[in-house]
Length: 235
Image (cartoon, rainbow, N blue to C red):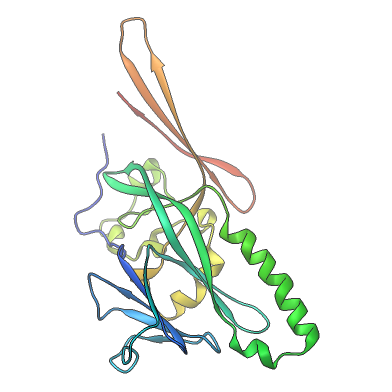
């Protein structure tokens, strides 16, 4: 029996705007302009969006496709955002996207007050962040959790999919789970995107009587091992 996503399922904001001001970044939903948050460029502190935060004109406005999380280093905070994506298929009728590019927003203006050693340490850590930006094989969906296989989803309690997607996700398969902690603390559920890392392989199986089946195999990385999350056969 095919499982369909619930019509009352929780959905993430999929159209976001990044506004850059001298003292802060603002990330807001285009569908719901009152929903969003700001991040101070000096200290990295997060504040929920209000009328005062939106006063003035930003120096730059750009589209982003999600917030993958935040990380605090010695001299400040860095916010990882998704800058481009590609739709690669559907799961339970919901679009699934692959992350094509990401970048860190630097909220580290306090670095100028750091010691020489602290500046060297921060520079080293920033080179590691560049590696994170180019992490391959990251997938996500705005409309459904993609960390659970079909067998486990069939056993979920009624109303489970109305919870925030990060609450539905199996933390073993969430690549950015440690980066999401501050967003979770601020209850920014509509902006919290669990990413999985893995590969999607399509196998076309041809039979003698000219019937063709498509086997979709998804392998997902965990912290401890490589798992085959689910195998779905479509004829």
